[in-house]
Length: 314
Image 1 (cartoon, rainbow, N blue to C red):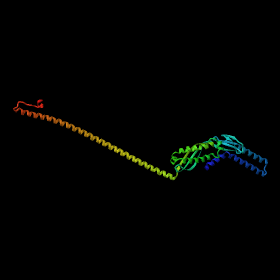
Image 2: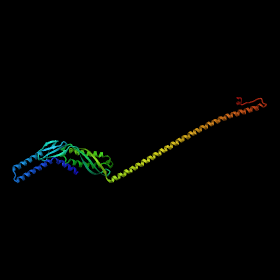
Image 3: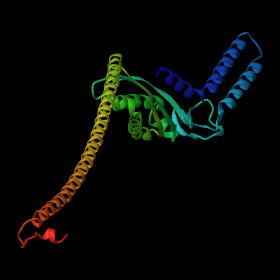
Image 4: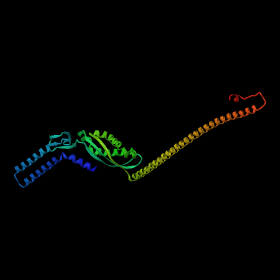
C-alpha cells in the first residue's frame, strides 16, 4: 500500500514539477536582483535580468506536453477546467496545475490478506488487479486516489469472497473467487471512471495446522485407496478362481455323464445280444428234444401220433 501511494503521488506531481522548478528559479532571480540592488549595481540591468528570467519562467510554465498514452486534468487556481488530450498545450502560467492519468491498462498487487473460510479454516491470500481508466475526469473528480481506492476495495472483497467458500473450494476454484471480486468491484469503480479488466488470485495458503491436517488426510486417503484396490484385486482373483473351479467341475461332470451314457449303452447292447443268443439256443434245444422224441415214438407200437407245430414245420 505505501508503494502504490508513493507512485500515485509521483504521478500526480509529475505535471507540476517543471513549473515548480521555474517558480523557484524566478524567486531566486528576484532575490538575486534584490541582492544586486543592495550592492549598488545598475538598476536597469538588474530589472532586465529579472524580467528575462520571469519571461522564461512564464513560457516554461505555460507549455504543457501530454504523452500519447495519457490525459491530464487541468485546474486553474484550484478550479477544474478541462482534460488535456495528447499533444502540445498552452495553459495560463503560474496559476495552473495538471494531474496526470495513464490511460493504459495498469496492474497493482493486492496485499496478502488473512481470511477465514466458511468452514472456519484460516488462510492467507493475495491477488493482482488489472484496471484501466476510462474517464479521466471522473477519476479526478469522484475519488481522491483511484488506485488506492480500488486496492482497498479489492482487499475487502477478497476477504469476503473467501469467507463465503469452504477451504477445498478456495484451493480448487480460484476462478470463482476471481469472478466474484471482479463483479463486486464493477459497480463502485464504474462511478470512478475506472474499469476492472481482470482479477487474478495468485495464492491461497492455509495455515500450518490446516496444511498438516490436509497432508495427513491425503496420506490416509492414499492408504484407503490402496487397501480398496488390494481388496478389489483379491476379490477379482477369488471370483476368477471360483469360476475356474466351477468350469472344471462342469467339465468333469459332463465327462462322467458321457461315460455313464456310453457304459449304459454298452450294457444295453450286451443285454440284447445275450437275449438273442439265449433265444436262439432255446429253439435249438426244442428241436433236438423233438427229434429225440420222434425217435422214441418211432420205436413204439402206437400208430397215432400228435406232433407239436414246431416239429411239423421242420
